[in-house]
Amino acid sequence: MLWTSAKKIFVQSWNFEDTAVVFFSLSLALAVLFVDLARRWPALALEWQGVERAAARYGSPSGLAARAKAFTVFIMAAGGVEHALSHAKTATVALHCAGGRASEWAAHYFKAEYSQIFADARFSAWAGVLATVVGFFATHVRSYVDAFIVVVSMSLAARFRLLTRRLRCGLDEMRSEDDWRQMREDYNSLSWLCLSVDEALSKLVLLSFTSNVYFVCLQLYHSIRPVKNAAEIVYFYYSVGFLLLRIVLVAINAAAINDESKEPKTIIFSVPSRSFSSEVQRFLLQVTFDEVVLTGMKFFSVTRSLILTIAGTIVTYEIFLIQFHYTSTDDLLRVNSSNATTCGLQTFSHSY
Image (cartoon, rainbow, N blue to C red; front, side):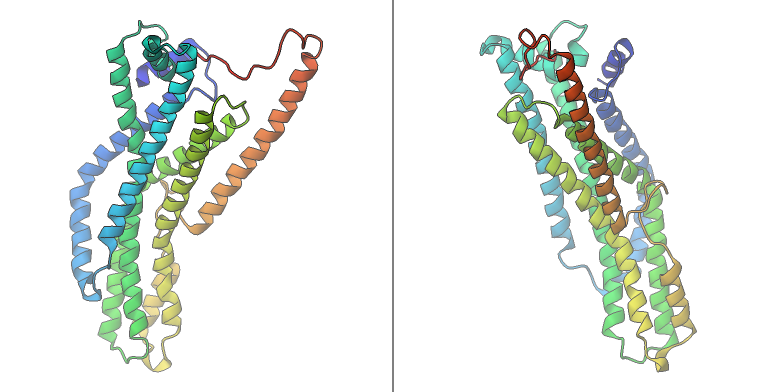
């Protein structure tokens, strides 16, 4: 399907609405990156296991497994609903094109949904069904990436949270030099683990954020067009809301790693003078200057400020679209004012 989408672009001219090649290229890239991650995972899992065993003295995160499972089910199910609404929108248009005739509906539906395949090839129901299956898995790869990043981020942030809780509970106690050294080394092990995780996931993080922002901008671009039917309205609002929710959830959970890694700094500053030592000072310096954070291949760091940056980008894009749309509409009305009796505005157009 990627080949047929690319072929369509080479034969015709590309425009912003030709998203099939972007969609399937993204899905293929994510699949390749997961294969690469599978090769790295055994070594990463062994490192993670060593850190977990060393940090067992701080306890286990309560409810982490349940929260991870619940979020995964939610994000995958919500992605399935979005996929179903997308096909329902196309099915409604196909039913209109077929004039309500069920015998012709399937041909119109598959030709509208997978125009890059049936543009030059003869229609085949089996080819349409196979394309639907491929599109289903390609769609859910993106949802799975977001869920995977969130679950990994939850686990790392929970470990930093347990270490911080241990520091806070024994703040008034007279700790020995060995106790502070042990906690500093545990913190250092968690920091190195986060660095290893970032090296393994940074490409996935980059594709996750860029793809979600791209598809949000694409949906906003579609919002300036006339609405065709109720199914399109439902799909538009659900899709935009779901994409924005995914961006926020991934950003907040990934940024929690950086937030929790900085929490010990406030506690260490409150250490009584009688307990202050060289190990406490080294611990404070490490927490202050270490940058424990997930990144998108070092192009950006996933912190809470990233959410504001993305929001600003989307708002700026929408303002530009609104201004461009009204300018283009005014020019079009001036050009067609002389023959308005013969060229009316159409609220429905066939795109196949």
